[in-house]
Image (cartoon, rainbow, N blue to C red):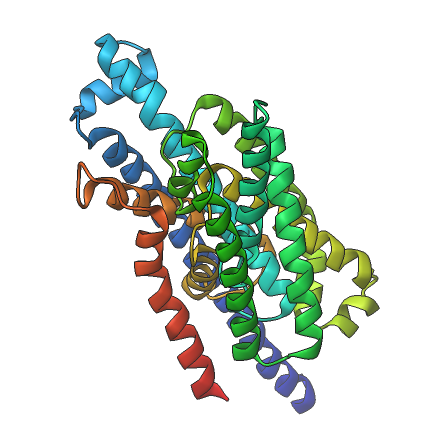
Length: 359
């Protein structure tokens, strides 16, 4: 073997081995993160069913879920009240985190999220208007009506933020613009609710603060369809998203149609936000905090890993927050946004401070 060949061998060997070792460590880290989230998901389900005004033992929970056996009261509490709420919080929490990830990809900004940018507030405003118009005319408000109204509101708010983002590239300025949009939409919503005459319409105030209570299996079914479709479509876009993360020019060189890709991002994020707002009201900070935590925990921003991570992580995050909202001051129940803000806002502050230090 010549000296040149020996040098090449010595150079390539460790590099290739180091690459495989780093790749193995990265995969192991992702597997551990997913395993922890799945374990947290299972534990949270048990705690959620077990706790409340009526305490249900673990044995009774297992029999009720797997065998459909037990006292009628226990079966009714589990299957009619608690399980639909748990599954809805899982689906809608995952949808919020996924919407946040899509918005962050679109704006190339880590603080972009449905709540902070005022998108959830826009959806809430149009849903409130639709519900009042339907109720005052004695019409039934269907799930499709709520989601369509929320989708329209989400798109209106998103289009405004997109227009602002082309003129303002500063992260803090974009955040302020989103907060202003949220304030305007909230003011309009509160004005409508305050002067509503019907008692049912007045109850919109509770919904407008955000809550997973009152979920039914029909609600869960619609959420499963909408969120499931959004998740599948997002997974199918994982390669274009990965290319877009490298820059628009790189994505275009890889054959990504930037115009239609951006439209798809906005449409999917608006649809997911609309589904959440229609059923649970606006929920704060999940769309920003969860993608940031998932990327940090996994040590990668690859969409093929981060997308399912956001879906599962967002679900677990909202399930845990929902348990706290129910039990912290029982029998009084907190609004879900109150709890998510307590845990999510510090993450956002940390993000902004850490980015400032890097500049």
